[in-house]
Amino acid sequence: MLILSHAGHELELTPNTMIIIKNATEKDYFTLANEDLKVEFDGECLYIHSPASKKHENTVFNLLTIFKTYLKQNASLGEAIGSKFALKLPNGKRPEPDVVILPAGTVNDDDSIYEGIPKVIIEILSPSTRDYDLADKRKWYKENSVPEIWFIDLEEKSVVVESIEPDGSYTEVKYFENTIISKVLGNFKIKMEDLFL
Image (tube, rainbow, N blue to C red; front, side, top):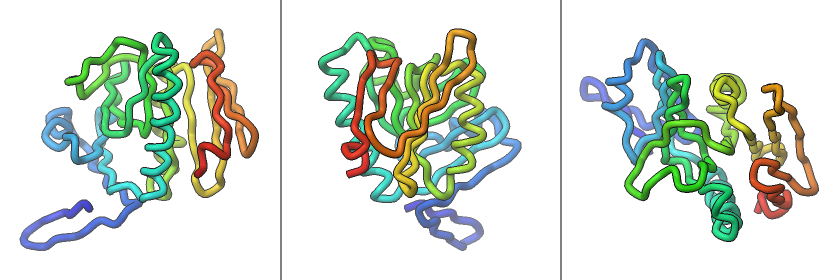
């Protein structure tokens, strides 16, 4: 639960709420960002997320379990981390994706931020963040040439996978059924029915 307090008044934010604070500074970001609050920063605005829904968190847990199992057997391909882990992309943007696959051996157990370009970023679309994820954050990721970006739509039960090509452009595959394939992770495969439990 996220509660805003001002002048003796409190407002409880329900799931699927996002607060945007304009004209923010990096100091503001570091003042608010902690392990209990999901805060993202684009150099000008802070994006503060309300707690996620049970369905959203179940999907994050399911994905992490699947990826961690696969990557334990294929450790050189990377490491999967969940949504409370911050990134600092080369363009200065500071997102906290729902699931991120980082290059193997690039973060320590005590690290809380990764500076660089992840191998795979996965965003699970929520009503309050759908447009933000599909527009702003998609642009941030592509500006930094993230090799693979997934957008999981829980309502539509679909997954969009965008993969970078040698010329820097992206190809997009939209899945409604069958098997999702990650080129970046050694042709890792996940069945749609295993994703949406």
